Length: 217
Length: 217
DNA sequence: CGTTGTGAAGGAGTTCACAGCA
DNA sequence: TGCTGTGAACTCCTTCACAACG
Image 1 (cartoon, rainbow over the protein chains, first blue to last red):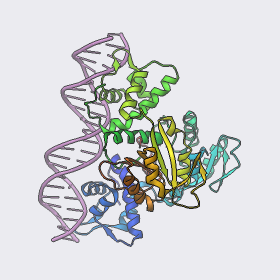
Image 2: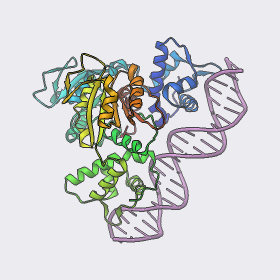
Image 3: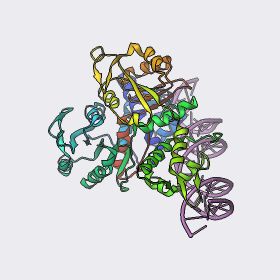
């Protein structure tokens, strides 16, 4: 209930994994999980799990473990997943189209409210249950649906311009799939996921013949 | 030229960014870049850039900067990007199809040699210039093309089985897009990229009204 | 008795600040 | 003079080990 603590970045990056393990446990009818159970499900060790969860407060019971329902609620709350969040996807190429049809968004409370593209050929077509709108309507769409999240799936050359437009429109969080660094003001959060970067990192460890498994984005 | 050094994980994860900045500089006709130039292009600071590059050896010239061509070769070499690597994609759903058509792979020396799926309806169809093959042919495909990399784009429930089959077939590096932790032996490298995890992390920092921008996978 | 919660120790990564070299 | 390369300080994260407690 209290929120005085500052949660370390590394811990924040792992909370989604715990959440997923909790959801799976819940679906399987499990009522409590020990730090060791959570560790095995997430590929971590139990000390790390306990330390991470201790930053959220005291939710475990000694000798028993963590209550699945209670911890699920707590982590969801900390991550800000209690209300649905409106998301727009910019760029309806291969990746943008795939993301538009991805069910994982809705399942976690992220509601895709619009797809936008600059290509007149694409505007008006239907993709993943949405009619593609013109990127020029961005401000309007953002205001209309109170959009806070955007997914950038445009070519690298246009990504910074798109980001600037999104920020101007009032979007506060960007998930960037363009293989380029985006410069954003402090109050805007941006994460970049680059597939070829991932493969290159993989390549390094592969040629080493061994490497740290795992890795969240 | 020497390779006695152990390169820190954090540095490895940033090398692709430098490589990208170098390629862009090269295309723009720039011959040298200072650590400060590289820092600005990658959204880092110059001390970090210099420290990172110092792990590769001594490639800079004091008072001048780094030779673009030379450093490009060096980083490519360290990442093991000198030869083309054969990649298979397992799972031809929305995401798998998008990845099959993604040009970023080829551009970095990763050659998609086959798409595989378990669904008989999909086997035989053409996606991104490849005829989809049956996942039962996995061993054969891997042997045929000397495949070392695989992209897993199947539902979470099947991901571990697919990973096991890939490892059995001799694949050494996995890029997993299924939202689940995969257990792999030490000599196999696995990275997981989960879109909804990314959004959840984003959500945390968004509600904070501020956060660390950037983030490679 | 089993499992959490946590100080303390240890390790990794970042930043500082400047000597050293072109 | 300008920029690299790097020891040293610092901050952040992980692991250990055990007291506290249901």
